[in-house]
Amino acid sequence: ALALAQGSIARTAVDSVGITVDDMNRAVRFYSDVLTFKVVDDREVSGDDYEHLFGLFGARVRIVRMQLGSEAVELMQFLAPHGRPMPPDSRSNDRWFQHVAIIVSDMDRAYAELRSNGVTHASTGPQTLPNWNKDAGGIRAFYFRDPDGNHLEILQFPPDKGQPRWQAKDRLFLGIDHTAIVVGNTDASLAFYRDTLGMQVAGTAENYGPEQEHLNNVFGVRLRITALRADTGIGVELLDYLAPRTGRPMPVDTVASDAWHWQVNVVRDELTSVATAVRERSGSPGAATYVSPGVISFARPARLGAQALLIRDPDGHALALWSGALHH
Picture 1 (cartoon, rainbow, N blue to C red):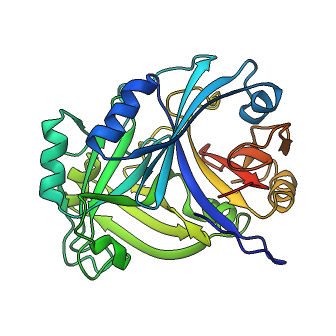
Picture 2 (cartoon, rainbow, N blue to C red; picture 1 turned 120 degrees about the vertical axis):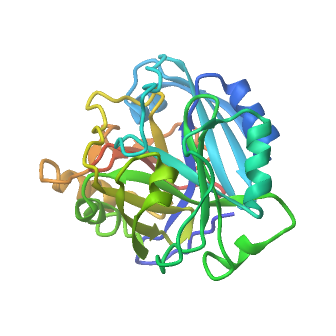
């Protein structure tokens, strides 16, 4: 439950992460049977308000909300119009890359479970980040793909890192700590996420070396990481590849039904301040852009709110901003 306090300063919660899938039934089986997510909502949406929200004429979307611990993802299948598939050569430093970090209580057991279910590796195997890295030393992590080719991560925190709840041992898959996105310039991204959206920097790190190379499956990687938090909810992690600078930009013609479209669902007290800030910065370097023509008011309030706005950050990652929720 995400309860937003009322007051003069807009409160912000990262409610969930939207993940586009091509075969919803297959995706639900994977997230439930392998990763132990639970289905908490299954609905189909369409109509003029959703067409304008997604910027897609004739949009009809099946959305299945799946919960793990206190966090959730929303799987989205665009029944119409059908989008383009995930590029088969997608790499971790391409700027359309995004993943969610699923925290596990035992990396070896979790990796074995993924292997037994035949997941596709995106890392060469689980990596333990070295102790010389004070910000990340001792963290164990592994990248893999879901059946639609979406990147996911399992991550285990050592006792001295992460939130205390991530040390629980009662379940193997515990919840979602953050979603990570590749950005081209950290400062430009901070101008949006921190200065416009109001998120706070929770930590920074610079990672490199053979463990990071094998985790990201990118040779010669040097990675600037900035962790951001809203008032409540899932964190957002900016991944800035200082080297190599070979990652490809988000296609400029990306639409919401394309397989690489993910969206961070953000619930706020109000949308006017963000909508105004995005409009005023339009055309300036590092500016966010509208997907919706403006704030959309729904004839029948959606689960996350009665009003919404879909925008893209300076690198093209999508955020759906919601307000006026009946319940969170």
